Length: 204
Image (cartoon, rainbow, N blue to C red; front, side):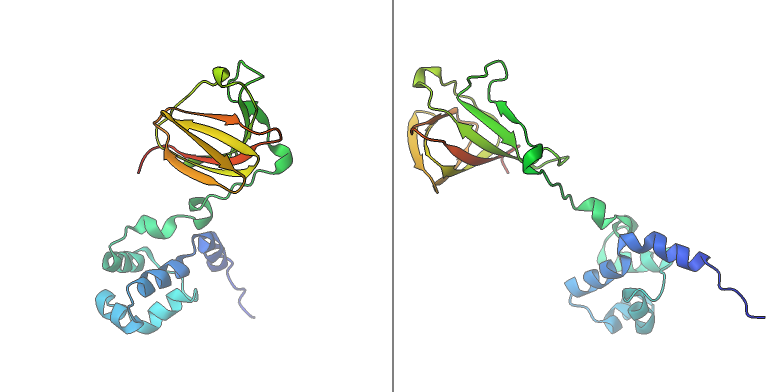
């Protein structure tokens, strides 16, 4: 009578598949420009075994991973970080965005904005779609915040004051500046004035 194959090995392979261990093993070796034979000398494992590990034909044991980790100076946790969770992908659809005034208590604020990355957690920067209005200069309230700012003007004419300097931008222009300086924006044209604004949380 033919013996039924156990489902346990298949279940183990499926449980570790998301961690992409074969790809990580190959990536570590290639980054060091190391051949299988050379890695075998450092680890005491055979080149054939290492090849099977890199091609996903053999499930590695913890002692085996520990030997390889020592060679490349990484911890065991390197192999068990799920790439799908390590790399953030967050999509914000146009119809999901909401427009907010720059001054929450003032619906007639000098500009309104839409967050472009509100679905992303632990953001390293913030991205906005900003809509500027033609308000009198007397209504402008300069503000500042730590970090830096990059602005790309999509359409219109924008008057931007940074410290004691006033800069005029046209569609297609961009500007980068340290946002710790007081700055303010004003639509200097007669039509819509829209820009993409990216702000960092700190200076690097």
